[in-house]
Image 1: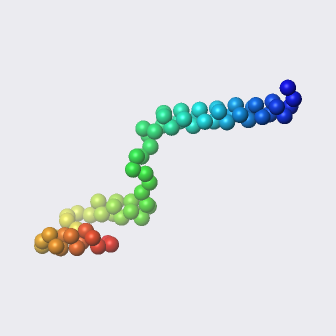
Image 2 (image 1 turned 180 degrees about the vertical axis):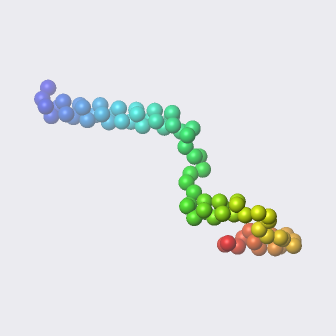
Length: 74
């Protein structure tokens, strides 16, 4: 075999090995990943700040007030 043929064979084998390792990582490490994905940093900061407050943030007088608040972009 020539040098070029050996290099091509090595590239194919390395590609197959990379695919195998990628599959194994996906199988072994998938339980450690967050299934919901990443949260925006601004959302996390806002939720952490709200969780440290005491008492209810809003008092609703009826279902319309609740729906208005839920649908707002606050």
